[in-house]
Image 1 (cartoon, helix red, strand yellow):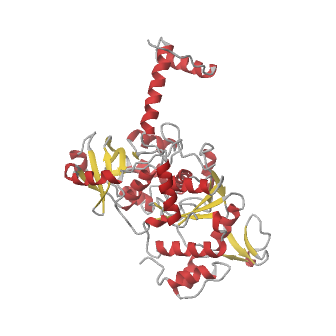
Image 2: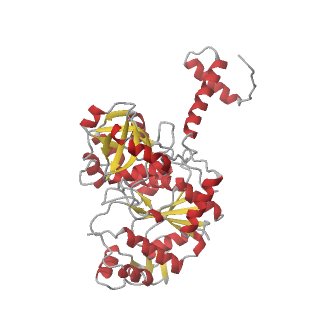
Image 3: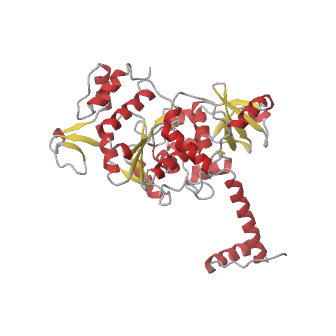
Length: 382
Length: 73
């Protein structure tokens, strides 16, 4: 059985195609508000049920509950606030009960039915979510950059914005049906923001040994200079799957999402998202969703002890390396050999090899994957 | 009141409701239970309005998309 959606029901909030035209004709009647990249991706996830049971941006009561208890007011685990910040003019011009048309890059992307406009304490928010108020933390910096108010209310998603990756995105209702049709009763989800190296492959295959199917779910979202381009990540995975995975045991599909880098809290959030896609298990590695040295190496694993009622099983993995003594991939829990026999997988080494047009060592990356990445020209975001 | 049905509920749940009714200073437990049920039913009906229940037609549409994208043979 695929996982039950979080909260029991998959909530979809998408405006049917036939009604979109009516809304566009009436658009002059709505207050129009522009959203940024992260909020747009939240809208898509609210729309398609990736954030079930939420049906929109949260109100002040839910925010308090999430910050203090890491749960919704109905006691359901929920760790990352899904909020929309608004400015002073929004607050003075929009009232409770109004409907707002949200735009992203000039494209209408949602209707928001306003329930509440409220102020919030940014310092308390970041200290609870990120466990730090250091403005050098990217998530903290983002919240400090928010406008002073938050708006809550249910949304209706308008699927008009296209980024060229539509064919790689399966909605939760589609993955759930797909898993069912393949006869999978247990599905492990793997989140990634990187091209696959041998460590990833080893984790995925170890996990797949114990379940029916592997759901590789790359996160497409904002990038920083030097990250691999989204299309490169997808091509690299397609190549790896084609050469090294049993065809009917893997599903590759993206999710668009703005990382918060909230470490342990975000690990729980990522698990909930995958539960809504139908996964029964979720891989958590070292420093999941972390950044810099703000969180302990395995803190994102430890937090799961606080959520025995999450409804998806975490699979915890250690860091993997190639061991000459073992003659294959290994990790510190199973390898008896000294450090000098181990080849640690280095993202920096892989990058510099690829940048200079050379395959990284085969202990780190499959040659077919390296070749495909290099065929695509400059694989990095400028 | 019109036609009525009797429904059995666990004793423990009944006592929780009685305790709650006492705390709220509600005298009539029977009416209190009916109010609770009405409230719960309305909430579920509201939620169901946006929850995903796939029709045969939608299932076929999804299958077609999954086939066209190579996820199904």
